[in-house]
Picture 1 (cartoon, helix red, strand yellow):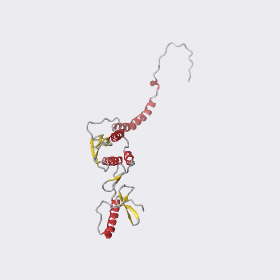
Picture 2: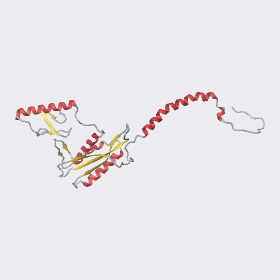
Picture 3: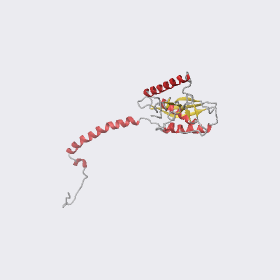
Picture 4: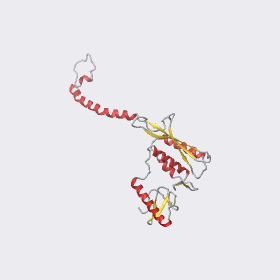
Length: 250
């Protein structure tokens, strides 16, 4: 409201705004302020507790000591074996947020034919490991590399399309061992089904031949496209894998 001043101004002073607020207003707002403080306290505590959790990223410094595992690869492509070492870093050690993550990879061999691309591949994979996040995609990417000269079969009938795919098998095995990937082992029901199929096949051939071949899988078995193992045989007019139980008849 506007007030008209008719008299001459002989002095002035600056009023304090806090003095103009009624006591009732302070009383009514006090519970609201207290409630806000109470509700924000747990959130702040949670933020403090989670802010100390270290996640894998490229700025994490390499410790002086890392835990590693070394895998031996022997292929028919070379007279010398490959030795693959994957070193892991332990994050948040001793806490409930403790994680073991791959940090770097090295490949060593007496065979120097593949030296250049092996060094390049290990440096790229190590850089991907240090970036953090989901690094399991490396397994699928390496498995999808095929050698134009053809792959080879490992002991037990498993087909490997290339040496790079063999490295993918090593990375997969390591990620399973540290808990980043789930194991591909058959469950109890699937294992029982496969064993029944193998017993049926062995019984059939024992009646015909009088003996059973000593190999892991029958001679002449076809390659299973699911588990990449030479274990597909015809049973009851249907192709069935004696390794993973895959069947063309469902």
